Length: 347
Image (cartoon, rainbow, N blue to C red; front, side, top):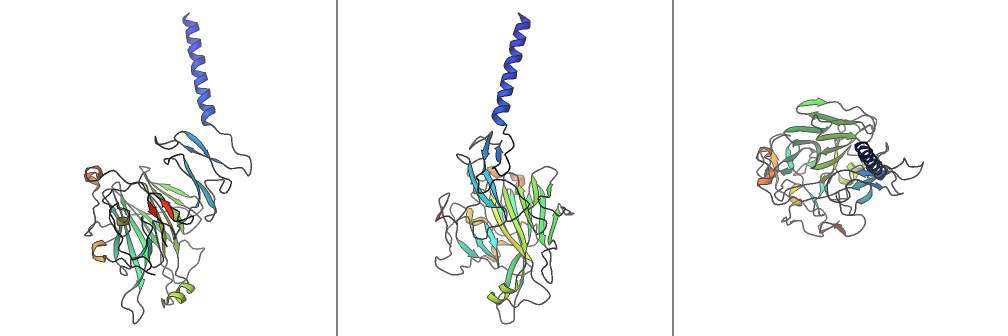
C-alpha cells in the first residue's frame, strides 16, 4: 500500500511538472516568424506568460540601432505590446535634445538654456538624482549662450554613475564618444552592439545599442535612459546661426527618459513636469517657450544635490514623504493627440 501511494504521488508530481513546462515553454520560432517575450515578474498585467511579438517588429533585439524592436510592458493591463526603436525619440515625452529642447511628462515642449560649463538638476526625487553638465557657445553680439547637454550624473542606491560625450574638433562616426564611470572609476564597456555591463548589485545596467555612440542605462524599478552622442552639424550651424568655432563640433547627447516610479514631489528641470500638480507656464502657440529657474536647479558639480529644489535623500527612505508613486512609460505622440495617463500630446 505504501509503495502504491508513493508511486501515485510520483506520477502526480511528474504530471504537474510536465504540465507547467508545457504551459511556459514555447518552441523556437521558424525563420521569419515573430519571437515571444516571457513576462516573469510582478502580479499585475501578464505575469508568467509568453507574449508574441507583432510581425512589424518580430524580435526584441537587433544589432541595428535603427531597427524597430518588440517591447512588452509586463506590468500594463492586458500586456501592452509595441514596436519602438531603442534610441532616443526627440519628439516624445521625457526627451531632452538639441539646444536643449525638452518634452515634459505633460507632453508640452519647452526650452531650458541654462549656462555653458555649469551643472543643473534634471530630475531630483527622494531616491534618484539625475544631473547634467551643459556645454555651450556664445557668438559675438549675443546676450546668452547656446547650450547642449554634454554629460549625465546619476545618484541611485548609494551609487554614482556618469556618462559623458567626449569633445571632438570634427565628427567621425567611427570614433566612440561615450565615456562611462561608476563610483568614481572609469568604466570600460567594450564597443559592440548589445555589449552589456552590470553593477555589482545588478541594479544598474548599461547596454550599448550599437557599436559606438549609443547606449541605454537601466536603473532597476526606477528608470530607463536612452542616449546617443551626436555633433552639432554644419547644417544645424547654418540654420540656427550658432557660428561655431572650427575646432569644436560640440558633441552632446540626445536623451530620452522612461520613468517607472516617481514620487509626487519629484523636481528638477524635467522632473517637475511629472508632478500631478504641475502647471506648465509655457504658453500654447509660442514657437520656443522657455522655462527659466536656473537658480533653482543649478548645482555645484555633476554629483551634487545642493540645488534649491533638490529633494534627493535616499537614507531617509522615499515612502515617508510621498503619496503613491506615479508610473510613466515612454509615451508615443506620433499616433494621435492622446498619449494616455490623462496626458495630451502637443507639438
